[in-house]
Image (cartoon, rainbow, N blue to C red):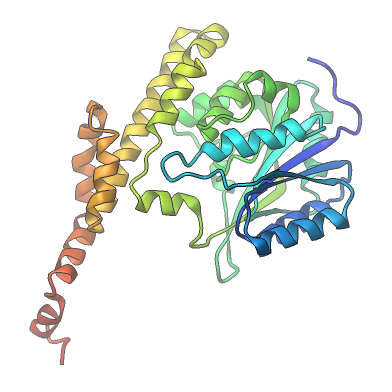
Length: 345
């Protein structure tokens, strides 16, 4: 592995569509980093006019910023991670950095984030990926920390961390999986994959030493525009992406070659099981919310897997109160029940 320069160039890829205020906050946080050897790639995903205005202003304000433009928005409800294949990798292709970092336009960084990340790579030349601590910010400004989910040393072999995650140990928890990665390592893993988080943890981070600095803060905000919430309401599940990672990317083979057949099989079973259990959870949630089309969509893509049916009863039972409340409301019985309980007029 080629040594990194003493002051490696860090490329930050941010794709955007319709959140101009959040985009400005994200980019200004990058521009104001204490580590300034940065290459800022803003991917215009067929954005709204208001967002294009902000993009133009940001590009004019800082020579480190370059735009990658798509004339049309790449997102599809039928294939929501198509933006990863197109936008993330277009940003990677345009990047000049030795280190690569992708972040969403609704996230932002503490001022010393990249200074701390680069320090990890300098301290340990074997380090191939690094990450800080995620901090969630609620609408009222209060914060939630993932510190309890990240009880691990400053450096550890990536495959050991991945296996510890499978075993349920509190060694890694980070919404968005915002790793800083050596460019050569990411490109050797095929760039950004549509099974984004699983690919990063099991296909990139696992094949090297990973660094962690609990004082490098990444902030993410709770808001109604979060894509994962919208996808859940539509009954979308990611089984096809998991299959693509296991079969097209050849994850089990790669793990077997590097860490042995037993470890490889453990990872494969975990990914398959998690995918179908998540599908059962999405079905149960939409069923309880009386969204039959969304529930059907989740089941349609999952029904052929035995694990889905094994997980489903428990998931449905967990949603029983929500289902009953929505059924009463839908049937128009709530006013009558309120009167019977002495709470009505």
